View 1 (cartoon, helix red, strand yellow):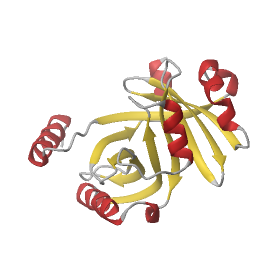
View 2 (view 1 turned 90 degrees about the horizontal axis):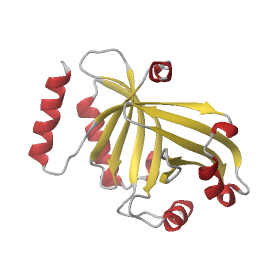
View 3 (view 1 turned 60 degrees about the horizontal axis):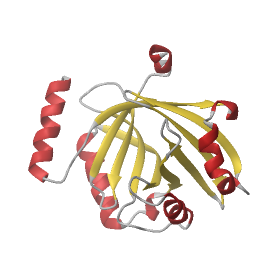
View 4 (view 1 turned 180 degrees about the vertical axis):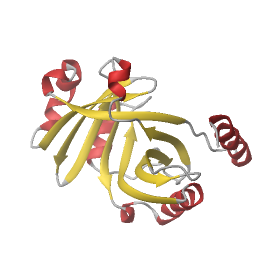
Length: 196
């Protein structure tokens, strides 16, 4: 199945449900040194990193943009804070387990995966707090308190096979109700060399 066919199917499915807005993008992230991380971004979250462990810095490249992420462990949870290229926070996320997702939402997510993959394995699930249009300090506070808000999203890292092709890695975002918002295919490891 070619790209046009996939796009047509997504469009028809979106039109039929009226609430589905999915995009297909590709992305790759790789670890960088602290000195390579934007200083302005780091200054904005230094106090949040107090008492944090296993602090790591990453650069994320997708087909459209470059962003940065700091990952760390705090209060037994693994967090990630993503910044755009202007050092503004885009989202805060932390790893969760299936039991942490409301049953109705989780059922919808599993139904999507079952219907769209011939075979799949969920590698990681994260709960996200998006900061667009929201107060950054409030978004950070909500994330660190693990509040269940209607604006949260769930990010699934999935390895799976679609349409008889080889197994590929995908990042799939669902809203709080379990409806698909975005699907990204992982880029090959050397993709950043193609860009630069």
